[in-house]
Length: 114
Length: 115
Image (tube, rainbow over all chains, first blue to last red; front, side):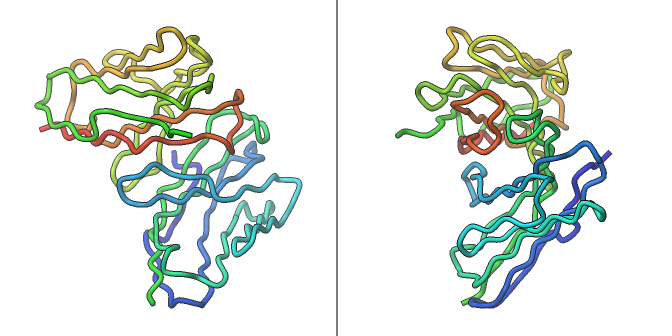
């Protein structure tokens, strides 16, 4: 039962353009969503989060959008840089920012070409 | 500030053998997590400790996996006996505040291959 799905295993974009990574979830009890970035041979690092009471959260070049009715969220990176090349994981939790365990998606490999 | 340390970084064993992984969290972090990440999947929580007590081990296969966190600092995760499907990266993470999802810091992981 895959409750968090990232349907695109990989994405390739040109430097300077927008990267859009998508994530869908099925559990309506999820109320807090996070994006993690992972470089090879390193553990995931927290990137940005959003609570279900919001539909958008922005941090510099990174913006996360949440569409609760569609159970869909997306991460926008503008402009994309070669250093953004990594695996991006979407994760969800029920119980807010101090909530229960994280459920991760499968990840999307982003490649930003110079 | 030193990050989460894990050892070994790589381990190759044969099925039915035993293996143990070690984790040293960030100093002062009371909450410690072990995750299993199978190739092509996201991390899955195996067990969460608060100091040396277990908070959540509902997804830990207790017939073969065990974990302990003596003195509320370092932790070890053991698999006995290992199966082929245990091949994965085992990630340790720690957090300074109970259940704070945004401040989970992950270690580099231990990559296990079971032959």
